[in-house]
Length: 111
Image (tube, rainbow, N blue to C red; front, side):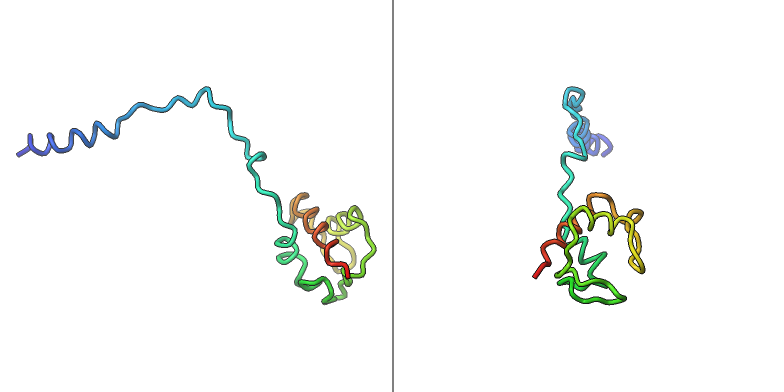
């Protein structure tokens, strides 16, 4: 009976012990190259829309109406990064890419 079991299991074990693939010549995959672009609309909806609203016009907690803002992209990035008044700084919460994406998206909310 033991021989029968060995004869059945031998091909299974042989199939599992195949040759390893040589990956030493393959170039390393960079996480940065494969990183998907940050979607500003998603960042805005998660981090900004609570006070500014999904269309930028809510004005909750004294937030400004983004649809009439005249701030440049650079000014928006600085404001989101450092905060102002009751708006908290996002530099320790969001990455620089997320801040830029949210700022760029906020530019699309103009009337």
